[in-house]
Length: 289
Image (tube, rainbow, N blue to C red):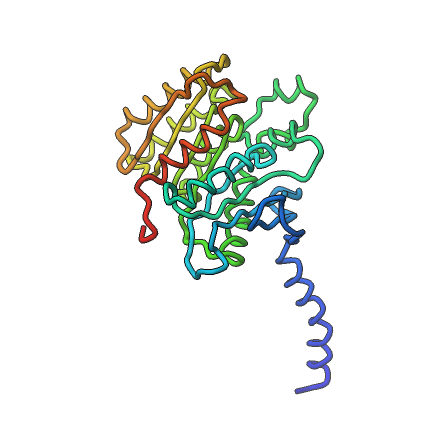
């Protein structure tokens, strides 16, 4: 080999190493306050921001070589503990053992950032009324790209996932779940959707469903919809309407249920929605699926 070729190789080596390092754009920062957990700070190139990712492993994970379904929980700053409450049901066999992945943000306030990542659209009038830039709202497509091209590959690499993916979304997270159901149909197999703000942006999610129906006759997913009986912002009639609309389509392969949670408000529905929703979507699950 010529000296010039060797020199060129040596010059390229640091660049190659840097490329490899940049590919791992997540940092393990320790555990959460829960047992059998890991926490990462994940710098997303698709979103251009850093997410706090919390991974909760099932009982016995380290003592087995089994592979597990993965449940992705949006808004994990609020919902992680509700999802962790499934540990007892997993231990008794009422739910399958699962890996829970909380997708949250490492910032003091998440009020505005939720609208960026969980909402698929944002009207000019809304942006103007809130003095927001277009990049600060309605960027759910980038959030989906982060999950598909960055987070799910990381989970497949670092953990024994079996390719069965569930999405849990509440309120704005429920809007994101419906957006993903009709637009990113390969991302998830099961959807747990609670108290979704379906009136967002002139009822975007209903238009998205109509667009999907115009081009598809199947929707082979398991979907749980819920709302609290004491909610006052239209979540109950909208949940009924979406459920009815999906049933009328007669989509091949669709397994769907809708439930009104008795005596629950928008703020108190979170725990029962997670527990009952995961119970429904996994009721026919077996490790051989």
